[in-house]
Length: 324
Image (tube, rainbow, N blue to C red; front, side):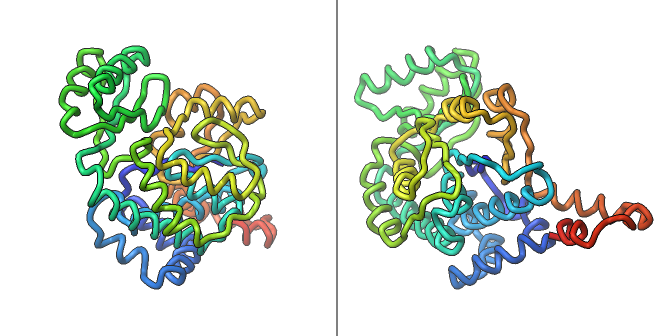
């Protein structure tokens, strides 16, 4: 089971799933209770792609889709789990290291902590993504910046030639020029930035203000680290994975290699995703089962369109499963 990193997610991307699929209703109602406010209503009115409410809604949507997939789309329950970047929060809940309410609370509190931190610290830093640049060339470009004492940290390695780099906005025009000269393509720039050794104080704040309030249980199935591909089997390891995400890069090709080495040949990507289930690093190694917010709606529509006679032979258990 793979939970994707969070990209720009608007309310319209999940509205129908969250309001028309019973499983999603239930989880959003539980999230409302955990936080004391209506998540979807606040998400609808929020500004920005990564608001507290967007992050909670993304978490809940991913978990609801994973549960739906286990009943409707997968031949067996997954034996391993991973979650690049933001997906690590979802993975912690899916494997039971955190209960659902605690995972929702943690996500909201971390979002507030990060927003407050970057309103005061590292205000010039951004994270820029680009593709089609040879790794050696990318290393040279970043090396030129670090040689001048500038921040230029690989935040995410998504594929062989797909990078996200944390650097000063002042240095971004020069980097973009180098990307174009190398035949590459700049994609987007994120604020606030992420995944850099420069954010050690943010890691400390997140631990003290948020994660110290939680207890992490032993996961019911192993988690593959998106930092170094290691196998995580204790609650403490899952906790450290979330904290280390502030200061360590996400390395998706290494995560893929670790999954493949452990015999994984099929991955279910549960959540709104336009990246991790589609990049060659994933598709070259696995059969990908994408389960996004539209899939349960399409499945329900297909069932409703079936002639009644074709459903006569369904058992009550099958009908109950389909309704879930």
